[in-house]
Length: 362
Image 1 (cartoon, one colour):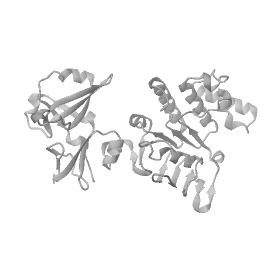
Image 2 (cartoon, rainbow, N blue to C red; image 1 turned 60 degrees about the horizontal axis):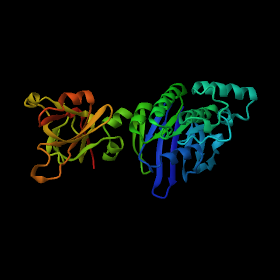
Image 3 (spheres, rainbow, N blue to C red; image 1 turned 90 degrees about the vertical axis):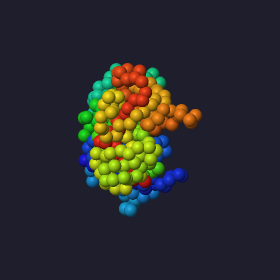
Image 4 (cartoon, rainbow, N blue to C red; image 1 turned 180 degrees about the vertical axis):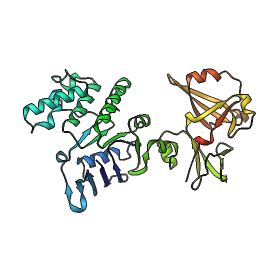
């Protein structure tokens, strides 16, 4: 089953103009706030009207502005899960889940609701009202309601963003379980990079209403096509760059030449590396010939419960000549590794591995 999407809609700040096809697997839609992610879902669901476009689900046309086809939302067989649950406060959990089943016989309604409560792990809550539920229970109820109509596509608009850390983890596991059994198109809008990576094999990056990248997540993270996509997918280390030879690039902002594992396919304007791929080598190893090994000094650090982010200056100690310390690179390491070398004398030495570098056009 495929969900074919062509949507054009004029918005106050820009025009939403996207075209892509989603298959029988979850697709994460990543982008900053205001990029058009939610509006895209609402147009697909029929809650907003596109100015121009076509949406077809397994060959069934939901929208075709050229032919003046615009199925109402209730006839699209599309389930939508909203960021803030959107449950009916005057209905119980069971009534919320069964809301879209009112045209079915009573026995069938009851059977489906019972099965969905079990599937989403909220059995026993069917008589409660939304105000009596935790955030995670409310979102599970909303998910069960979206699945009740047996939708041919599932749209999820930042379903975890209103939950605390513990509930997010629980609900993410619920979504993974749902996706494993669903086998139909599912679009997951998020601005959380790690969430997008964990829940989907494919990724669409949206920026100001346009598709900035679309494809397998590993390829987009390993070789982002533009500086903007690299930033949106969480990369922190960039430098302006120019090609020296076929396999060597000068990183202008880092003050060094870098050997690449592969010759660039096109023009070189920037070079980047992700923070977790910046490696540290022993001082003795640094004296042996190696590609892309440079002395560095620590400017400052920032800790989380499990990782440490190190802000580094290359080539010379920070604060020389009274200057404001410049930060060239960020490195992320697990605390176990940090404990090993944190007390070593400076300079430390970093290796910017050729296979981890990526170059980008202007």
